[in-house]
Length: 123
Image 1 (cartoon, rainbow, N blue to C red):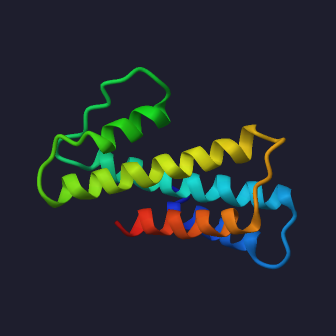
Image 2 (image 1 turned 45 degrees about the vertical axis):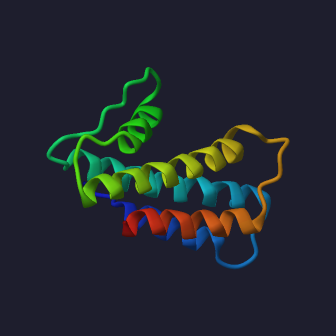
């Protein structure tokens, strides 16, 4: 892979440095989500036994479902659930940033999305 989740979160941090207008805030949220998403996908794909999505939906919804319904045990199961729940929250905020243009995305939400994405990556 020529780009990593670390590169993507780095872009989110660059976008959030200095003064931000709302377009930048929305971009920060999107980049933070995708950094976490790609990290989760790579982590999940490397599991000995991938989780069970058990639902129809897009690739993002299926990954979140698989993470929150792990088939592995022990520490990996706990990590999987934590990743899934945090990724779901980030996805909700990313949907607001990308699709709910009449809703305000605040500076605090943009900054928190980076914190949350980094927390996912550290799990």
